Image (tube, rainbow, N blue to C red; front, side):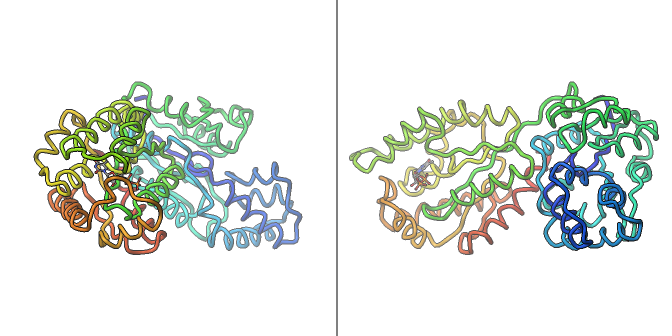
Length: 425
Ligand code: TYD
């Protein structure tokens, strides 16, 4: 590892915060009776100290600029701070740096409260040893002071990563290396003139510079389970979108299925026209589909460092074939041993709900498949088996009540998912 201490700017380096900043700056210009500038020029508000930007780009006096900052913060505080996303690949990079023992910090000209709120929102806080923003009555952000405060007491070699000349100049003045994040809001010319020691065109190039020689982080495998009609598919899709906003590369997939061979097995095993299939054959078909899916989809994605979200997995076989069909947990696990070959989920969301009510909801939506045609006793045994798995493995299986609104359930799913991703397995 080249650097044992890395200080990051926030806007335009870790987060793509342009929308919230531009809209809030436009709101302030309007409130001050100034024309809103063309998009190109508004983009320049991202990064530099606000007071400076309002003076420079808004052509304001010192007092006007101070009033504009107040107006800016009004809108930013209400909605602007969340009009934001993490650049793809950033959390995986931070995790790998942390695992290698690097000291990581944030030094930003943004008020401390918003900085903390944004890092918490996106689940980035656990990666940082220090987070330094400005205090509410500080109008001017002195980047040099912020970076100094963020540095550890001792280090071998430190670098600053930022997307505007303020970051680079301050870091160079402190004798640090400075990597210019060209994917942010500055230009190559600006970063080079400021003395950047390296330029990262994309977050992946940045990861290449900072992680040089370090192994890639394995991804995280997360499954979604529950009785038919519990709403897990909707929750999984919403979570996938959210995790992308948080900067993760996400692979969503499902069982049975996930690839052409596994989908062909799905069509056979769920076909309501198929009659006389033995319980053992059914269990082997689900396991066969899984053997293919693990090898051609799940494992490769985990090796690429992605977050894999899978709609049903081994627990469904334990619950449906082991519990529902009565083959028993041990037999189903044995049938699946070679199929999964050690690829077990890091975490599982189990959606709890009255299984009969869930099934009624399911059947209202569309025609049942071969397994969904089963009677209430079957559904009850499946559900009991799911609860049994949750009791056996409380660390892995996270029970979420599926009885609230989609939004409320999703809030809980997000809150519980983010810490899983930053956890060092
Ligand atoms: P699912 O994809 O949840 O159904 P839907 O298409 O309605 O969203 O699951 C398909 C059915 O297959 C479901 O009834 C559960 C069953 N199943 C098993 O019995 N064993 C298994 O191992 C798996 C993965 C699914």
